Structure formats: structure tokens, C-alpha cells
Image 1 (tube, rainbow, N blue to C red):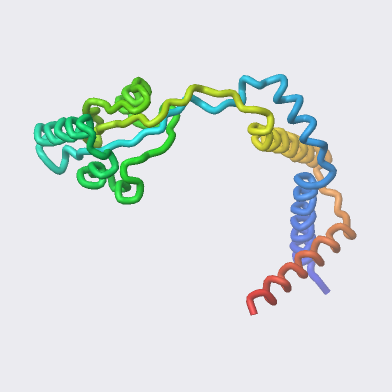
Image 2 (cartoon, rainbow, N blue to C red):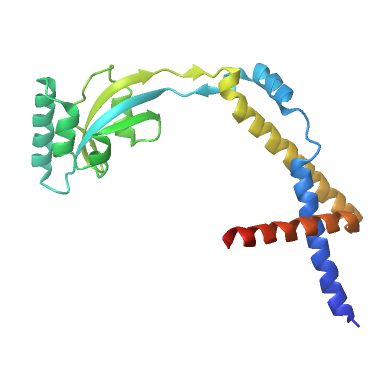
Length: 218
């Protein structure tokens, strides 16, 4: 016969199975229509859903650790003069840039919002006009030559553009509230109801999943 300790361990394991089953049901079953809730939230808070101001930039980095600072600055000035004389930015980037990604992107960094790049870099990048090339910008990485491809102002999202983000927010909040309420209920009752039929169905599904995974690996 099983000892009381063995029975307690079995019951604890069964309770754990049921608890996981319950949490899964709270996350997936009997959920409301998030679409309609999302439309209401969007209408009430349109200002919260937007594309931030951003710039599409390219750069050439002259690393001042690889050469004397004065030599690095002179090289940057020379490259800028050649660019303003009509030479190709991508070609000069591949030839001179010390950025480790230059072979893949030819100096193109794509779009960035404020706050991603170092402050000195940001200030210059967001002050340039489309197509303009900066003077050398010094950061801890070296001297940057920045080319602004395009400056895009902050832009509000349409509902369709914001839809997935809003639904995710609402669903996350709803499920978390459900789980919090369940925890509160458990604490009050100080016990967990044990549903043998639900546990039986749950364990059967898990056994079947394990068998299918094993068969798939054969």
C-alpha cells in the first residue's frame, strides 16, 4: 500500500497538473471579442498609437583608435570633400568606413527614431536636410560622416496599423486580470478544487502529444 508520503506526493503532482490546466484555460478559453474592444480603445486613445519621428541615414565611421586623432579628422574631412564633389557614398563607405557592418550594408543604417544613436550623432542626424552630408561628428567610436536619406515626422497610425498592438495589449491585460483573480480566489479558499475528469483529459492529451513527438523523430 502507498504510504501517506507517497499519496501526498501523488496528490501534489495531480494538483500541479490541474493548476497548469487551469492557467491554460484562463489564457485561451471563453475570451471576449477583443476586436470590438480594440476599436473602442483606439478611438479613445488615438494619440497613443503612432510612428515616431525617425531618420533614414547612412554613415562612414573613421575610427580614431586606429590612427592619430588628427589623422582621423583629416581623413573624414577629405572624404566629405570627395562626397560633395559627387563621388559615390556607398563606394567610399566600403573603402574607408571602419564600421564592422559596412560590407553588408555599404554604410546604410536604415531608419532610426531619436534616442537610439549617441546624443551627438542624434542631434546632427535630425538637423540635416534630406540628401545633406554632415561635417565630422565625434563620438566615442570615432568620427562619423552622416548622410540623411529621409526625415519622417511623427505620424499617427490608422486603426489597421495599430490593431495587432492594441489587441495584444487588451488580451494581455484581460488574461493577467483573470489569473490575478484566480490567485486571489485560491488564497481565500486556501485549497485547490480538483477536477478528476479535466485532469484525465489533460493528461491523455499530454501523453498523446509525447507519442506524436516521439513518432515524428523516428
